[in-house]
Image 1 (cartoon, rainbow, N blue to C red):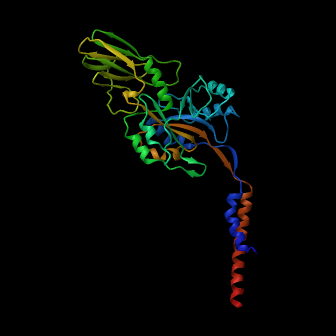
Image 2: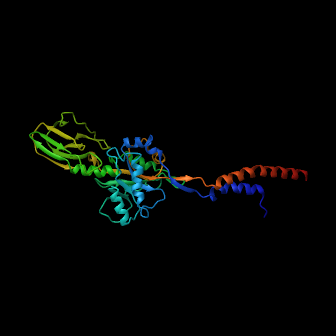
Image 3: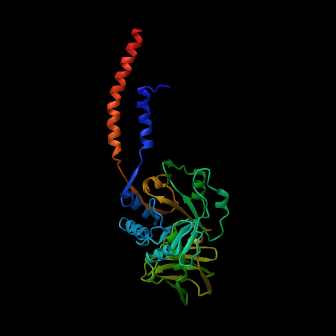
Length: 366
């Protein structure tokens, strides 16, 4: 079968992007980390964590761990509570050298499908499925245990495929009485809750959360105080009124609210709070694992985040909090063969048209 010139021309056009390899060169930056979206997500309560460098295996190249931390720290704080990134998204298996490198770089939390056993970190496993359409598991989200942390997977793009989110699953999560949090916030809230000091004198209860000098984050902790005494006022030690919480407050902050059995209160490191009671009655107290004594906690974990705008664009108005695993993107370098192919196509186009015109003229003269 004879191949016509026009067929060759069209074939060249369609096969050029397929047959021309993409060349990776150096590394790019995601400008959205510090421009518009990054600051907005920080103010919203999200966490920026590390996931390495695009196409790099942290087990093969441990230097990627510290490099990713430096890349992230040079562009943004990790959280509204602290600047240093403390969470790292790792593959299912990590070797001893990788564990040592993660420790040396100051990471405390690993996730979220890790099968390697380690006692050096808090390991958070993926236990809430995915937000991808037709993949989300509502039954799994409905069966969360009290005081547990539900960690849900989200990736906006896989290679050149844009992933569609599961809107019913998102709507379900946004209407639950749960604490919207992040890996690091959940971790340090539990530590802070266990460090609150409490004393009583006559009809007052004095609370203090000392600053944790071993921590790079300053996250509030929470208590529940059970008493039959009537609370008349809650204030800072300096005399200023302490802020109040609503029963539907789902994002961590300082404050207090009454319950049927007593009072729930969250205070920040370095603060001292005085609770004034109308009667001098006995009380009991215990740390809260979940802010505002909500049933459980939820975070959505963005994986391989190379373009924050693309990963966050569907959630600008959502109350959900995200733990973004930031991956530094590889820069694309122009292949030197592309200009040559482009010139060849430009030359071939008029020649092909000229040939078609001549052929049609010949056919009409027959």
